[in-house]
Image (cartoon, rainbow, N blue to C red; front, side, top):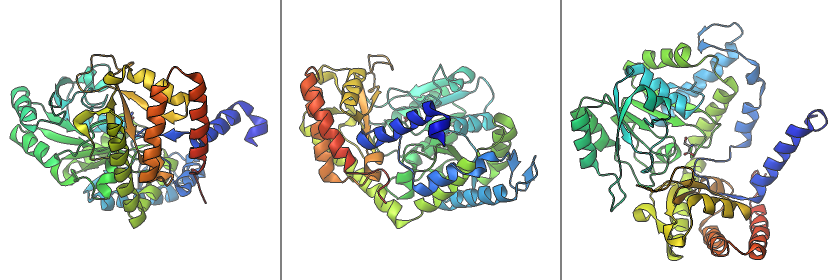
Length: 410
Ligand code: DSN
């Protein structure tokens, strides 16, 4: 028993379970996997080494590992209508790394969205390998609309002549026109990488256009809206299959996490169901509702709204930084993350905004009426940030409220 053998780890796990149950998690990149996913990720597949690919491993004893990886590949291709899938990347970052390494040389040029507009670390940010190895130019959202200005992206692409254009985002709340990106990439003879880590689940449910037919490479994580285990995924055209596969292993990874690949396979099957599509619809409905409720309480929303599972709140008119708001909300059991707003004057460690998303709370069965309640909790908390007594009372209410929506009901 873990409890008697290793009380320290047991305790941390127990408290994490309690915390997940008693709090309202609004982090858009997190979710709650099904019991089936949890089961295979915690299974004996973790005992197995399987460097290589199905049928071409460096180890014996891979019969069932081959079986499960093939299933995961086939399901990923079917789910996204892709020509090839590599299900081995340990994370979204490794998926992006594999794509860059497969077609770029050190010093080549990337064009990507800047981080304050919603871009990701691995989209050429200086402190990340992608910014160290490659020369990045960035496009931003338009200052007034806070939307992507495709004409501006085109102008930068023509001027900079990148070898690869990266689109997709960690905090852009609006629909991305992948077809337009593809036209721009073609015009400047660049590859197109669409990073759909955040919106993969919405794409599967036809709530966001798919980039698969428009781009050479699509990368994703499997644990955000897609609601699978923590990991990465690459989809590519058949012509890049060998390059991608050989970059993932032996290029940048060793043994695949077979237990996680099995979890991905189960999650892909779940994502093919009507239940999953309805879940995604509710994620977006909840997000729009929560966004609207906060607007009515005079919160400024970046780009004035959302088309997806997330939005960013600009807190400058409330006299708060993102860090302060994140900390105060956490005191009452509302989990968010501080986030840069476009052209933010504050650092990424402080920020002027918080990012809010609805995948987790929707997985717990919450609907529009619960969004009204959550908007009230947020507003009351931030308004009473200096009143410990009121904050304690809100904490009690949040705990009672969250307890009504069990993480694993059945
Ligand atoms: N860190 C992830 C997010 O929270 O959006 C992106 O990788």
